[in-house]
Length: 279
Image 1 (cartoon, rainbow, N blue to C red):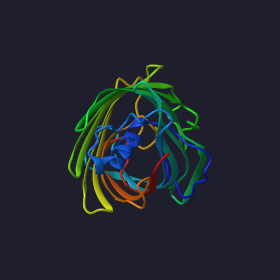
Image 2 (image 1 turned 45 degrees about the vertical axis):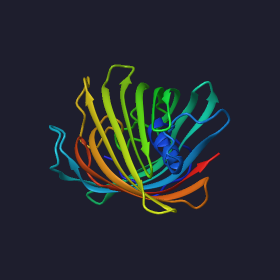
Image 3 (image 1 turned 90 degrees about the horizontal axis):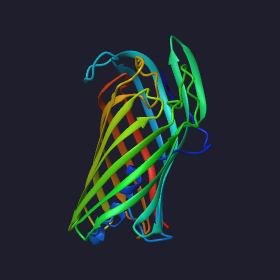
């Protein structure tokens, strides 16, 4: 099981979904459905600090909303996502992470600090119109973190993740979807991942977004112990985010997410503070 109390900003990890949604929100004022493919030498970065807390877990024998007592988990994480256009409808996407986890059970605390898995992807835009966009991404997950069973920071396995991403935009609103399959190259598991976001403009400065994330893991060659296997989990997470337009290129935000259903993972909540910065 994992828990995180403090966190040293060591470095980061990768994925294209959150980055794409953030850039799309930046362009929402122009109803431009181009969430993933910035122009060459342009893009954005999204640094964030996330705090996660839980003291129960979803059972390991079935997917559902019920929970069982577990160790207390407090989790500080620094995450950096971003996108950099390289021209010809291509962009480089990344999701970099580092964290400190502290797991407390029966008055005994075990901690782990360092890098987590890093993800980098190459994204290609298909349709890129004013109201609709879609793209294809191929991500590579590199297990740079520790996979020790006591407090894992990593799945311990290389993986590839092909994704399909889509976005729709209108006057003052947007919706994005992402569907991908994370395939662990040693055959330990295959994970189907779904990510979605929808937002509306509340005023000239404020935007409100709702988010949903679903992951289901299949074909594991070994049992997945509850709360003990980093990326090999089953989870439904719902959340919301309030974003403030400080300048046209800088948008800080505050987010809250709740783990509402799962299997073999802690059941808690997460608070995020960050800023989307166009570069």
